[in-house]
Amino acid sequence: MATENKSPEVRFEGFNDKWKKNYLEDEIDFYSGLTYSPLDVQKGEGTFVIRSSNVKNSELVNADDVFVNPEIVNCLNVEKGDIAVVVRNGSRSLIGKHAQIKEILKNTVIGAFMTGLRPKNNSDFINALLDTQTFQKEIQKNLGATINQITTGPFKKMEFFFPNIEEQKVVGDFFKNLNKSISVSKIKLTKLKNLKKAMLVKMFPQEGATIPEIRFKGFDGEWEDSTLDNEVHFFSGLTYSPLDVDSKADTLVLRSSNVKRDEIIDADNVYVDSSVINCTYVEVGDIVVVVRNGSRNLIGKHAQVKRAMNNTVIGAFMTGIRAKVPSFLNAMLSTLLFQKQVEENLGATINQITTGVFKNMVFKFPIENEQIKIGQYFENLDNLILNHNEQLKKLNSIKKACLSKMFVA
Image (cartoon, rainbow, N blue to C red; front, top):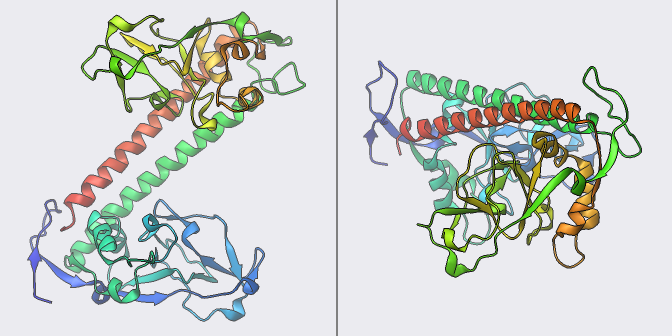
């Protein structure tokens, strides 16, 4: 290997030495995983075997955990700082997926389709290096032609640029702290989503009940059954032909692709000329609902229009709802009660809910003032979820940019 020196685009102050190209095997000790048979598996006890299912978003997770009889273990136990890498899998895209061992894990090994890395200098630096596109390119270059795997030989001989030990530590610490921030943000977001899920059950009367489990002070009395047709105004979407579509036209047509996580997004936008419009334009507060789709599980997906959207209509496979208290209705459409009615009323052959069926769905409604309070609660919760989601996106974007600029490609 000829000596080759380079520097990253962005680096910390005080470091000026060139980075040197080196084989992974010179920076890392490699070890193999455990081969075991189904007869060796024990239920919930024994030696834990880390497999690809236990690696998600560069973190170790509990998922489809496997434990084996400790007596058959003939490989190294993982240590804090080790990195477990998927090197063989039925899915090509999972090769190279990895997670750092961040705490002491007794009686824990990796499976045969994993490789263990034990960095000789700085584990955090190596862990960040494995997140780079440079590593992904090496993976693609070394994948087997017929079997989705990287063998240990080519893995050891992968070449990357490395700084001195002091700079490795500084770069490693930076990404370790960034990963912690991302992890904390994910946990907060998950907690908020779980809170919403729980409150959608507790703040709406469940089957057989006429009042919710949790209620705001000052409200009592039973909620009353009513059809959606009695509570809201429905409007239909636009039927258009491919000839009407023009990316330079002025009217946006909202379709199922524009609804994600209960929010309206820009995705695969379709525009038509205003001259073909023969339906209602959306207004702030309207709720757009997917009522027909090739995918059965997308029926009932919905989003509230939260800002002025001039020259915007919905497509023919959507239904628009205009409610007196839109935030309450938007929350109600997120409940399992609504999902159940959707499933019960889906067409046998075509994935759709007809307007007639939709209008006749029956739900329990409180008085208007209670609807307002409940709607405000879920509106605030949705805003918190949206803000945390945006924060997480920004952190991931920062990480992606830094991985590109702080390593030598």
